[in-house]
Amino acid sequence: MLTLITNSYTLKYAYTTASSCIKILKRNYLKNHPYKHIHPWISFTQFSDDLLNNIIYNKDGLVVLNKPYGIRRKSLDTSIIHVQSKVPNSVDYTLDDALPYIAKQLNYLNLTIVKCPEIYMSGITLLAANEHVHRAIELAYARSHFQANTYWIVTVGISKQLEGQIRLGMKPISDPQFKHRKIILTSSWSRNEEKYRKIKLLKAEYKVLSNSTFNLCSLVELKSSTHAKNAIRLFAATYLYSPILGDNIYASRIQKIGNTYVRVDPFLSCPGLPKLDMKLLRLLNVRVKQQEIIPAHIHLKSVVLPSFFGKTLTIEAPLMPPFDWTCKQLDFKYLMPIMSYKSQSAL
Image 1 (cartoon, rainbow, N blue to C red):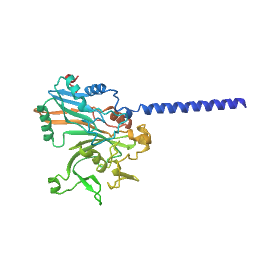
Image 2 (tube, rainbow, N blue to C red):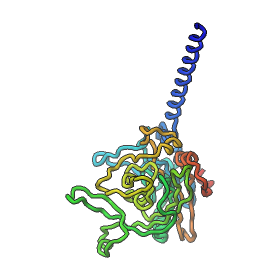
Image 3 (cartoon, one colour):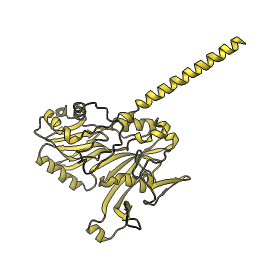
């Protein structure tokens, strides 16, 4: 009898110890989750050096860096607006703050930001060392129409359309009481609306590159004429019916009813975290209560500058670590080769 009690106690102790170890391992893993280390810098100097290491092109006054997610172009006037950070352990450093240091290290008098993804995107940022280069970049974008920027986005579910081109309008609408205004996409508008700029044109070309494990997500290549007013998020959610992974602005515009996704009245939907499939959360090693740590998966991967000082220049940026980790976790079956242009003068 004593032997049985002893064995029972031993098994119970072993089970309790194992459970405690598993909890500690899970806690440590969540603490070290890639999404929690999007901003790993502990000082401004470390941040500036990291930007310097992320330079992917440096020639004749054109400098291109791979902007990290969650970093804005320049500081906002906090007395006017307060923007809540969506990045765990985020920093408030900006690209503008680091430019003098980067310019000095690359032997330029100064650098200015010409083109830059918005704060909650990563990818190609174009810097100019002088007005001549600045002007050449602007002219190249004008020549390209909407073909200059190519984004990679990870969307939730299977896109309604696998490939295509579309010309849409971004239009503000009001509720019946005229108290609130929301942006929608429309396929028709009047000449007056376009003439008086009551709509913003959105030209897009898209292609699904791969579907993930269990078809939980899609990897989409997207060329967009604008990223203003969260156009890419709006397009993915309300046109592709496949919201961007990590989007907490427009993802609620689409709801799943049975096996079908339907658009929701914009005034009946509120910005917030969408409900994600538990299988997807498990693949990402994220709990339901921690869903807010998932970044918006939008990466400006490629920029084409036609007739840039007499030739067409194509620059590609590698995926940033959190985005790349997501792609590996979701096991996308097809990934296009990632090209990186690393000038010797940038080192």
